[in-house]
Length: 188
Image (cartoon, rainbow, N blue to C red; front, side, top):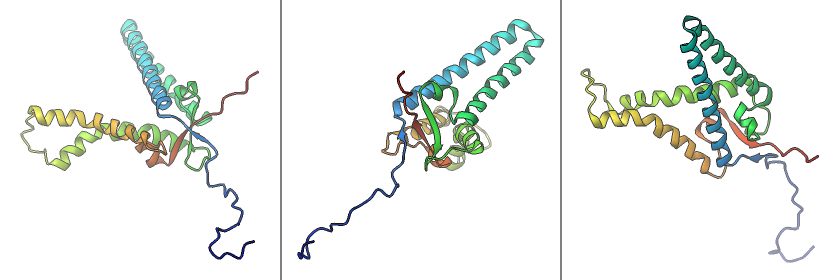
């Protein structure tokens, strides 16, 4: 120990455990998983529609059975593994910001249904904010473009938040979750 009053402290600093024990998913991997999920959902919808048109009246029942089966598989994967089917393909998982497992309501409602409700309602919010609620409902060009594009603008702005250092989108912030990369399985 030094008698110098201006010497730096010699105390040993231990890790207090505040650093997360997980690796955040890269924005590119999250984008790839989101696109794969959208493509998979689109393919399921196209198959369901093709069956509906081919069968006739019974196709209506088949359409809903296919959709319920697909969304049931997605929700089962979310509840059991903490990931959608496409996130599983890319080795991603959704956890709470403290690293604990995400509960079912938080994952399914806040992460999956909230964006479906938030993005389509943005045009209505813009109409209310900017006062475009006249009773004649004239859809001139400028107004229509703003209304139609506002949902896309909201989607891309919330996705742009992934580029920040903590890589959390608006939905992640609202639901207190993070998307992590699962460790690679050991080579055999």
